[in-house]
Length: 368
Image 1 (tube, rainbow, N blue to C red):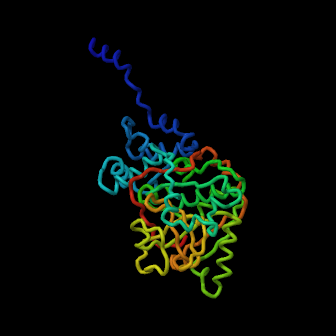
Image 2: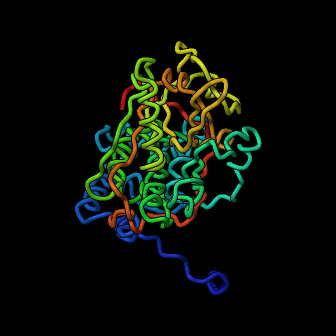
Image 3: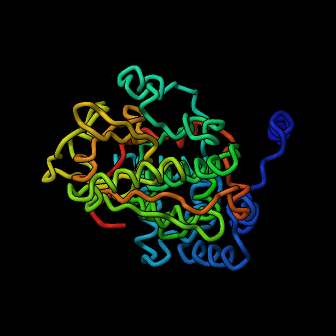
């Protein structure tokens, strides 16, 4: 007994293990949980036969139940899925655990400014001439904000694209940078159960257009250009002028439903021209349209900002863009701020990263 008392005196009293109810209530403000949500989580926790929280994975367990993930699965399915996610080290579950930990443990960080645009200009110096237009460099108000960057390897390009376009739209209206939406905080506080399940368990994204409309301030208005008909030879000149006019007036645009082919997905090639190999489409992607120039050989070239470390900027000609059939959406309604409901979910950094070591899983060919 004397030995036990001396050990306790040396290391302090034994930590009291919180009950599930105590632990989840402590997360209420951090994860945006109301009383009914907490009650439902406690019911699901108890029905699964769980009792104690007392290990390094407590927050992982808590979040899965707090957000009611798997609530429409059977009890056995849910218990097996959760335990495999947390304890099984095969490729599938390592990916699931990384995505979950990125949301609730690591969060978004500021990347070192890597001069990605300067590096791109070294490869394609024609974008550094007065004949080219780059919105974050040349727009009368946005140039005071400058380049904003996001880095993400795993499949939430639809969110990164929308967050960046939102921040650029605010800069076009105000000439100021007030931060970007923090995606980890958004997942913790605002994302739906189904979207969380899709991201964590399936590495699937969603509709970039709907997400952009959701995070914009009141009365969002998008001007959409459909490239599958936009660059038809009969109307090409007028439509090209419309896109350039919109880019200069509204700023960078969301490029959604971009059909990624193998040559785009693999390697570090920064310029893509001509017809794609349409039979080898590997999935859909979302980026931002940020620039335009006219090339002596290929004609109209469009500058796309991307989120992949090996391919942060890409230039494509009109024919390639037409073949990939994205929808280009400009934010036409003036955006002066991030909506108040997201104010506590913002990241003050110009260069943000949600760290994952996984390659992006291209979403399937479904129009969104």
